[in-house]
Length: 286
Image (cartoon, rainbow, N blue to C red; front, side, top):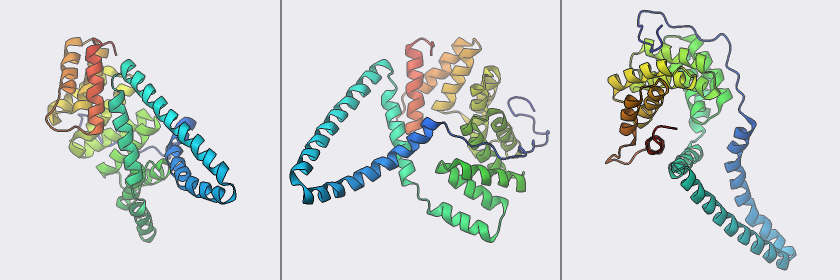
């Protein structure tokens, strides 16, 4: 199959025979626990302070004063760091908005649907039900659970384009770019234009991340022609074109990504617009 996944006559490539290894970097795993730890501290601290006040009121007051002062100084320090970061790297505000949105989604995501899907899977196992469990687990960033069920969904029924697509997203998040590209090729082969072009876009992203900028440019250009593109797809297209020396085409793609819109952008689209604007300000150096 060509790099752009355009060969519709080739049969889908089978899924890898084993589940992908799921191992998050230590720092990333630690970051994922920080929000939950903060909630627990904020919940328990008032109770501990109240219990301490019953035993030693003066000590409780001193602790409250110290923690209040530390919180104010910490807030001012974070504001200073954010200001300096915005000067050194202008997309910082867009990045902060994106991080807050991801944090909001992680807390707003109810585990109930996932538990329900797991319970239904116990009564009758099918590719569709494994896919639903894997999709919900992937949405919640429960990657080991997602890996188990998405791999099983592809094994049970390799003809489901959505299973290959979700499996590809998982593999890409885990850094298995070659296997992810195979999964996205399969999704595009089984259902051309799958998920409004998302599979083709992910295929181009994998090529770019893997360092094959020429293949990435071809795939992303095809995505632009067939699906119109977005801020992020044009940003990736611009990066790929710049890497292969097509500077004028890269600037055109980046200008599209950077131009303002009448409608409010999603946090992710706003992030790529900010990156494109910085790229143009720096003359395409980054």
